[in-house]
Every structure is written in C-alpha cells, then in structure tokens.
Image (cartoon, rainbow, N blue to C red; front, side):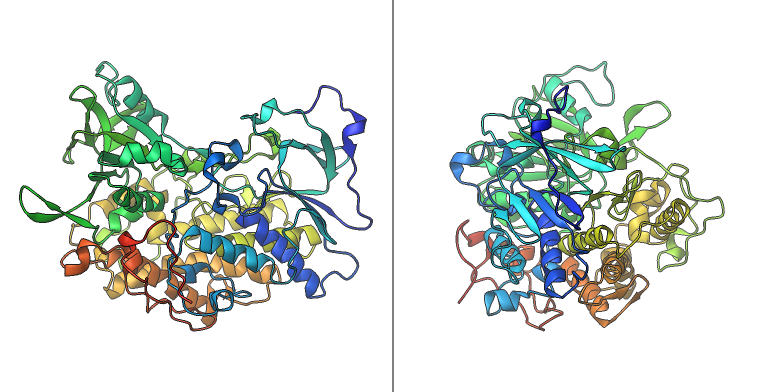
Length: 622
C-alpha cells in the first residue's frame, strides 16, 4: 500500500526523453513475449521518431521464466515460487501448436524432437527465442529500450487522473514476507502505460461449497444433514510443486481429483507414476479433457486377473461425506438460481466413491491482481457470475448438429466463454485504455494467444493502433459474443439450454466419433475461431508473419487449425482395445500428423513409453 503521505524522496520520475514509459509487471511467458516484440520492432527499424516505448519490467522472482522456472527444493515454499509448475510437469499441448514462427523448434534443437516435452526443455526454448536478436535482453539492469528488475515486488499500482500517469510502488523482495501488504514501498515511479503480464496462476481457485463440505461434513444439498468431515488429505494442484506434500498423499493411496481440465489430466498421469493405487476424476460438466481421453494406463487386478484402468472419470461431484469421513456420495449437482440452493439431478445415476485417502482440487487459478487499485483491476471470477442476454431474434446458423437438436432457444442468462472478459476489449481495460492485460484464460493456442496480445499491447503503446470509440467497442464485443453463440462447441459453455440439448444426445452419437466428417467440421469451426482471433490481432499489430484474419484465414492459418485438430485427436483416438493400451498415454500417440507448419519437420517418437520416463530423463536425442 502507499504511505498515508507521499514521500517525495521515493518518487522517481523514470522519464526517458521523447519516449512513452511503460510498466510491465511480470517476466514469465507473457512478459517475454512483450520484450521480444519490443526488440523485434527495434531491429526491424520501426523506431523512427522514438515511437517505441521505454519499458521497465518488474519481476518478483530472481530470473525470468514465470511458472516454468526451475525451483530448487529449498525454495519451493517461498511465496514467489508457489505458482510454479512442479518439476516433472510436461506440456499437455503438442508443441507444434505453440511454435513461434521466428524461432522454430528445428532451429532451437537442430533436429527432430518429440511433440510433448518436459518444462525444462520448453523453458529453454522460450528464453532462447526471446534472446535470439539480443542475447542480453533478459539480463537484469538497464538496456537501450528496457530495464528489468528482478526480486522486486509491486506493492501497489494506481492511476493519477490529474497527471494522467500510473504510479507504481515497489519494494525489494523479502523472503520472510508472505503477503504484499507487509511490504513498505521504497520507490514510487510514474508511467504512461501499465501492462499486467503476471500470469493467471496467481492464487488457487477452490469452490467454497465443496471445501466446506469436506471440512465440515455439512451436506451440500441439505444443510440440515451433518456428517463426519472428510478424514483424508485435501490439496490443490498448486501443491504438486512440493513433493513432501504430494508424494505421501498419493503413493499407495486412492486419490480423487475434482476437475476435468488439462491440469487434472496431467496430474492423473503423474499420480500413476508416483504410485497411486487408484485415481478417480470427478467432473462437473463432462466436457473437460479428461472426459474425452480414449483410454488410461492399466494395472492388473490381482483378484480378477484382468487389466483395469487406473483412472476412472465420473460426471458427478460429491454432495455428501459418508462412512465416517472416508467416502463420498456423488451426483450431477446443479445450482437452482430461483431458490439459491444446490440440488442433485435425480434423473442421473448417483456414484459412490469409496475409501478416499486424498482429494486434490484441479479447479484452476485466478490472477493475483490485489495489488492493483480497484479501478484498474479485472476480476476473472466475474466470468462465473456475470450474465448477458441474446437478442430476441437470435437464431443460430445451421451446423451438422442442427438436425439432431433443432432450434434451441437461448437461456435468458448467458455466461461468458473466457474469450471475452467483462470490462476488457482485446487486451485493454475499457474504463482506462492505458491499462492492459496480457493473459490467456481459455485459448486452444495459449502461447500464440499471449504473443498476439503482447504485439497488440505494443501497438497500442506506440500509437499504431488507436483504441476505438465506445460505441465501436460495444458493437464489436456484441458481435463477437453472438459469433460465439453460433459456434456449437463454444455455445455449450455459454448457454445452459444448449448445454442440456447436447447433454441429451445419445451416448453413441456421432459427435463422439472423431473420425466422423461432421465432428471434424465442427472442431475445425471451433479451432478456426481461436486462430482467427490470433490472426486478426497479429495483422493489426504489424506482426512479421501473416496468418490471414478472422473469417479469412490464409494457408498458414488453416494449417494451424489442422494442427489443433491433430492435437485433439491424440487424446480422443486412444484405443482401450489395443494391446499397448496398458501403458499408452496421449503423449505416446503417433505424432506424424503434427509436422511443423513453418519447417515441415515431423516430431520424433519418445525414446520409451512416457510412463517409464523418469522426471529428469532427457528425451532430446542428439
């Protein structure tokens, strides 16, 4: 927080003659994308008239890399490291889907490598890419167009409307201070623009209702029922960084993961490596990555002498703790808006999850923006609470599902997909267009999405792109929201009525066949939406590589869509009837359809089954 009275001795103007001043908060993937854009445009000769800004980058860790950094065991409980990925984490997305056109994997490694890689190899790729034009760009200290300050905590950011500047308060990192409010700022500086690039892994997001159920034993759907609280261990996926917490909670244990997204998919496989006896994934919607996994690694049941999957996936959430705090009754839990209570859908079968030792919430994160003044802050939690209404005359354009679901009338209360954040236009805060955010919440191409936002932010700072008038912003956002309502695989996450229509389809419906031409068409439409947004932003920001634009992708953009489709297939087409299904994961699937769209290089196979690879074992064959 700022002191009650501003100490003028703390105020550093940070003025660079004739240059716009930009505060960049964070030097992880998003921050490095922005610094790369800055250096690229300088090298390209775009600084005529000093139009490029001078950037001061603040990073609380002692080096760049963000959540991809290697964290020594002795430092894993320090506050600046708590959001880092655990050391053995691997990518969940084929690397070809986030390959940078200006620094290919072929250029970096010098030869073909597997399509999925551990974080240490990806971090090296990210850093070397950023340093390709200037080997010192990530060094601490002052450079021609930027300065990096590591081990620096941003304690507060506010906007002075009188001076039309941001005031950024900072202090040296103190490993003994676990909260920002315990810091007293030692320097306050003024900037023309502020860019938040601190990553979405700020704080764990845990549904309070489920946590209360586990800790108190109070039935989720009937508060009058009081049972014994859950007696096992409760963790969040963020605790995977600490083996001293994770291994005892998993080895030889029956583990429940709440959540079905990519973090649950990765942690399930990691838990098998750590010796979990059983992993049970509980999904709220039934539409996450885990629910579409064709098969999971198996283990022989010594009683039946048959091979059984180690991982089970149930579309159900716990609503009651039973059997003296060791088991759960689970079902399809829905929120009744009118009565303000949770209810169990009695039309769906209930699931008994027995003898649970550990529950791990894989329910995501929320960005830590608490140090921003309220007027500058976005609240990602609003994505789960704010609603909007489609026009009365809305009619979804026809798609292959239309004959099966008909014309579905939209729910009056529609949600947001995550591609549009309330109060934001592209990367810009609508209420203050000098405040920007580089962040990915929902993209199928997360790093290229960050790349496009970084270039857009720089274009705004340089004046290459002007923030449009309020009525233009409103019209464009409404147009995009309605476009998402026209894409079936986006609308289901926005419109409860459409979700129910898809959920009522037969279990053997053609949408579950990923070789069906209709399924391929719908997935291409869905992926084309994401590539289109990326292509549009990059074109407007004068990116050196052209992917076309939204609604009119060129050949390169279309090939990026095809890559996304191949990435999806790796999970869905795993066949449990194959002999190799006993050990096979999506990372072991045939990668030949994932050739680089820039070099044509086909990824190599892993040197051995992924389940047999040790945490520090190299897969980069020389």
